[in-house]
Amino acid sequence: MTASPTAASAADWLRLDRQICFSLHAASRAFNGVYRVVLKDLGLTYPQYLVMLVLWEQGDLPVKALGEQLRLDSGTLSPLVKRLEAAGLVRRERSARDERSVQVRLTEQGAALRERALEVPRRIGAATGFDLAEIGELRERLDRLTSALDAAAEEAARETR
Amino acid sequence: MTASPTAASAADWLRLDRQICFSLHAASRAFNGVYRVVLKDLGLTYPQYLVMLVLWEQGDLPVKALGEQLRLDSGTLSPLVKRLEAAGLVRRERSARDERSVQVRLTEQGAALRERALEVPRRIGAATGFDLAEIGELRERLDRLTSALDAAAEEAARETR
DNA sequence: CACAATTTAGTTGTGCACAACTAAATGGCT
DNA sequence: AGCCATTTAGTTGTGCACAACTAAATTGTG
Image (cartoon, rainbow over all chains, first blue to last red; front, side, top):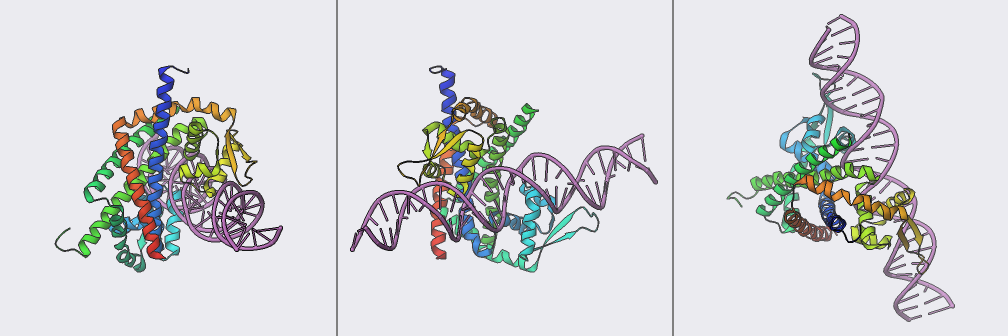
């Protein structure tokens, strides 16, 4: 198996895999890191900021809808939203019509926080040196990658079954 | 930039921020997800796989060097490496020359796992539909983003001090 | 109507990321 | 030599991600 072409190219792929895995992993953590610093002033973590962004944009939503928007399940969202509630930014209210559903509502304080959050993208964007076109292109590529990966996960899971 | 700069453009940036934040966050988790499925056979998590990739490529390393390669600190690596040890894939040995340092060594079993891991990149890569050039380009962009973000985090941290 | 299947949140347990801290060994400096 | 700063791992605590599970309400079907 030493000098055979299959083994060599498989090893090359392993090296490439290390590179791309690492790049994405590092980028994600770097992103998280810079937001952590900027969001510290607002008292938000990065995932909490994502939730607030959705609420600011779309108004009050049930946990279910939040999870769909952000692709997060209740195991992640339930405690996160509770922490937002503890911070006084949202209220959780059982829907009267469907008692299974919990509506997440911005409080005055939560809505007001948006004003301060308007600063955030400027502080990030300005410093990264990426212009709008580049951001858009990167985003398009990442979304394409995500779709492909989701499909691949489906495929891989099917193989295992 | 539009003619009316302040409120409208800040809100626009907030919306863009939501989009790019979400795209990267989602891509990272999708990546994690597809690897989770594929790595299940090997009994590895994604970060554990990253550590093993470095060890396969570069041989035994102290925890310090692993952390530098992967930009992970001891708070993450110490328990992770312990779990790899518990799985029989590595041994941890205090260096005789410098008793502060802990050398992470592949066991026979750990080295042997590489053979099975050679399958992994093919299973991922084939399914994503990205060719080598695209992977390279994406990687270059992500690395540039990471550098910029690291610099931005430095900058932001300096502002706060 | 009765009851099984589905939907919606929440809980529990495992692992990762990171900040803040501790402990021990080392190296440098006077 | 003596001491202090640095280096290297490890520990503790908080929060996120996700799998597997539970509980309760709702919906669909015979």
